Length: 104
Image (cartoon, rainbow, N blue to C red; front, side, top):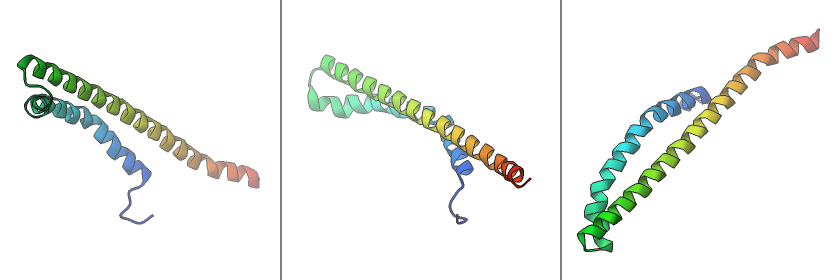
């Protein structure tokens, strides 16, 4: 590997940091989506106030669910990567011992 490419441990640390701040980013985006959907998206579909509110609630609910699902998928991916890196590091520690056993 070259010096410009991070190793797997550095990538994992960066993903763990992102996992810590991701709920705040997604939550802020969801809160911003409420007025955006009311002011810009809902008027395209309906004109009445009540229906505009219902469309806004529907859009923000779907957006919130999508954010939650994305976060859970990303969390599972990071946990799987943690296990993979731990397995690789334990295998790397065990290899010299196994090689020494073969020689003796």
